[in-house]
Length: 254
Ligand code: SF4
Image (cartoon, rainbow, N blue to C red; front, side, top):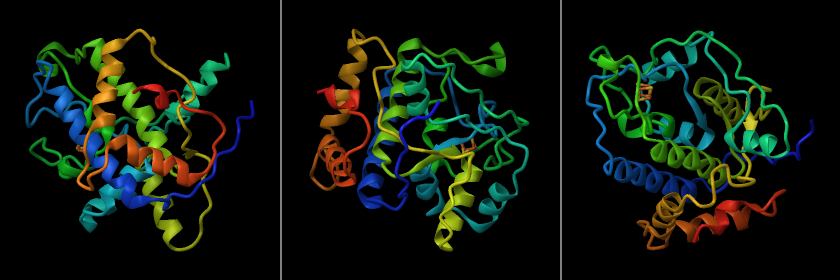
């Protein structure tokens, strides 16, 4: 099935997008503190090679990534790859299409994990790591227990993050880092295992989930260091990028 093409311009509005990214990360932390999660430093069973990110997050991570960790990332092989981005997946589902499956690979410990079970890039870790929580100790129960309302919020934030990274790409962190390096060298070929970011096409969740709506409204009204709100900057980024193929449901939250 052919979906509308998306424009790839990963460098577009980086500073504005970076400001939103930091606000979104801080927001996740605040929202998570409303739950009684049992995660603590050193528990790291969720730290695997399943590292799916937007190019915005990869670039943010690269800004403060020591060369040896960059090398660890680039040396990674046989890792899983996402079939497509969260918003493309939502678009396919909306159109009644069978969602594609991720490309399998060996799931191993994350290359950015230290020997003490601590993340070596903790302040810059991507969203996929920031929403990994459990109400029970995974080491005791064998698996994480995540409240459905937090899962729903996390899924919505993945869609929003893709939406705000207009012109960016989505894929495995290693692939995205390689792509950004090639881009710097002036060879902007987008490999087939990366997806272009899209706006969120429609509600992936029940519209009556009011708590979710309220959480998003809190994020949208959040004041940024520049003095503007999250929503104002988001709108500016989207407007500056130009029209895209669909109006996003995320516009309707406030
Ligand atoms: S980046 Fe850090 S938090 Fe994320 S999986 Fe790797 S070690 Fe864990």
